[in-house]
Length: 66
Image (cartoon, rainbow, N blue to C red; front, side, top):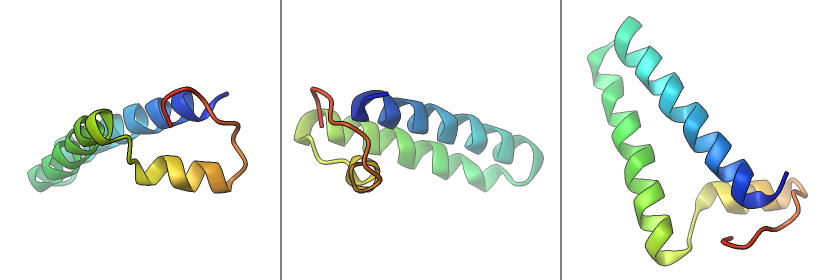
């Protein structure tokens, strides 16, 4: 799995977790979904993604975007 796919998989997982937390724990967890979405949006324009930096340190092979 490349770095690009890892970041997308992690973002999708975080969105699903935040929706579940919003549903079953507290409506305030919707802000986690907003944060993930904004982070995806800014990384598409700037190329900077904190998750990509962490995954790179774990040794995941680079992709095209990050």
